[in-house]
Image 1 (cartoon, rainbow, N blue to C red):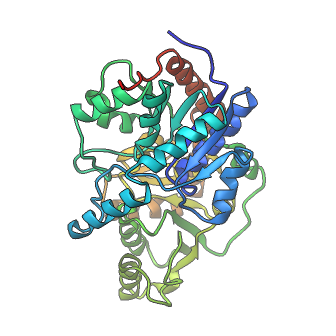
Image 2 (image 1 turned 180 degrees about the vertical axis):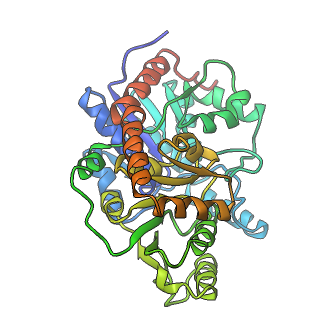
Length: 409
């Protein structure tokens, strides 16, 4: 049974940077075109420009306040985890302050549905249970044993918690859904792929790429995250025939500024690997570039070595720009890329196979063009803003008919 469309949605976000918030902003704009207004509560992560971008999308109706992240801090040493937990509790007032901010935002801006755009923050569900209003919980992360995110409650306990605090749950891909589907009661979980404004990339394909002395093969991924596995890309690049005119780029904020200064242990490891192979001249480190259109216009082949992506926004952006993709057959990347139709897939952690795939495309311009054209069409057919907005609106309407049951007082 479906209910009416909400008139206003409060989006809860765990930061103003990254692919999740970009997808949410695109959704907000799509919802506005069909008469559904938005406001937001956001954890204060991200640059001033990124926070302003979110504020502009909701016409200033946003609060930046610390939110609690209920996932276990498995990426940090065990001895640091109690201190991190204590800091979170202090910053959020044992979650009383953060839930109060969300509750106040609901009332101030008259939101009739809460949409938490990440599984990491529990406050949206808590407020929905306090007020007895619909709550949509969006899972954009891979969860469970061997995955990037772990939770104190997993399995049936996790599903029971979501069922008590969400009207509907959205997974951003089939692979994300597969991690949690068996934990939840029937009818709670829906799959809606992220929507991306593809027009900005599609338009760029009308202009021929400038002739370059070297073919540019690039990885675009945050250098703060080891699970992106840049090291696999670097090792793959080092196996590509040095006689070929190729430049390898790694986009992402690099504190070491291309290895000229001390950086993080991870980036220093990458630079050392390249230096040991005497290959510094083949690698370029452009840093973080805010405009993904600029990035896609600068490269000829997009490579991605992470196998734990729940979606893979950068892959869709690359395909929309007409780029052939070399990716890993794992996680969301393996779901988005159609092997030998829109790109090439290789086994996880297999830098030899990735190097061979990159070299094969470098040597074959006709194949690059064919894969790029097919990828552009696949992106338009599957990952457009309109397709995402239709899917989310259907979930909203179902959620409106089944608000979260209020807590007993």
